[in-house]
Amino acid sequence: MKRLMLVGIFMMALVFPAMSQGAVLFTENFDYDAGVLGDSAGQANVSGGNWVHFSGGGLLIECVDGNLAYPSYTASDIGRMIQIVRHTPGATAEDIYRQFTTQTPDITLYASFLFKVTHDSMSPDTATHGQYFTMLMPSSSTTIHFGRVTTKMGSSAGKYKFGLRATSSNSSTLWTTGEYDVNTAYLVVLAYEYITGNTNDVAKLWINPSLTGAEPPADLTQTSALTTDPVDIARLAIRQGSTTSTSLVTPSADIDGIIVATTWGEITGVSGNPPFSNSVFSLMPCSPNPASRDARFSFSLANQGKVDLSVFNVLGQKVATVYSGQMAAGQHSISWNLKGQNGRQLPNGVYFYNLSDGSRSSTRRLLILK
Ligand SMILES: [Ca+2]
Ligand SMILES: [Ca+2]
Figure 1 (cartoon, helix red, strand yellow):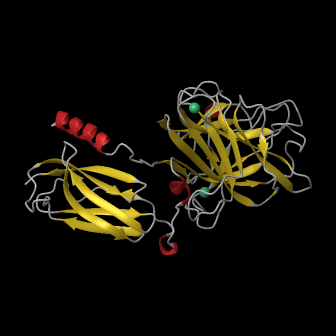
Figure 2: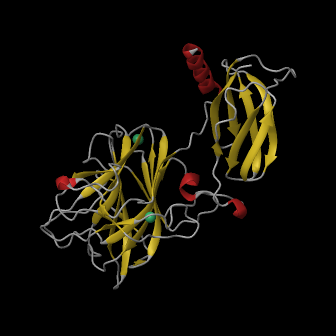
């Protein structure tokens, strides 16, 4: 049986070579007790190990009462939030990361978060790079960084700019031309296009992008200067900079509602249909499984459009079309009588059912056992 399944999975890979397997890698609402988030110096870690201390012995990052909220953003106003603090020169400040499933090319990694600067002092407007406060890292290093997001003071009091540096090999940091307000929550989205080949990865940053429709043009876009590809990407870090310079300080800020995913839609809960604005493309396990007389498929669609739901045998041959046609966005459920193209019930065995909306596709396994 195991070998049969492996053959089947292999065949499915051939049948769906362009399958887009989006995945939410983690959602972080900081729904923990208030307290220290890292585990430095024997402190209890309220995240239960989700967040890992990796640098700095002071200014521990804390989970505090309160939330950041943003209209229509799914990771909004849930649990608590964290605070990072403006670095005091000479002090050592804690950095933490959360690990996710190791990612390899070719993918685009998205990391969104809610962000509110709470102190009108950080790196000056004249700073070249400022001090970055979040970035992506590989699974086995804390010193290699991708998509450094930073801030520096704006041209007047109470204003600041966001910066983006694709990698530490890039000589420049790009800065927003627009300036943002202290004590206001913004939705920040970082993307890192992780592409096979050298000096071709692309980092992007959006501030308050539209949560409906397709991925909009980014506010900042920078191509990586790295001459070798990252080994992998598997961590999102929150950093409080440590320096002896008064001109290089990370911001004091609240951070909340982090989503790390591999599609824009999973970050934004994107939908063209307002009544289903929280819908995402998702295929649930069918029921019952194993099936003996019929099976019910449940799924949700992010957008209205043409949908195909079909069943394949372990050789990758289509044996039944359960549904093919237009469907609205939102939740759906379809019952199937286990009958194949010839009108007869399919024999016992392992099958795969695939849902596709033209741009996304998801496959699950079904056992027929009569
Ligand atoms: Ca929260
Ligand atoms: Ca590359």
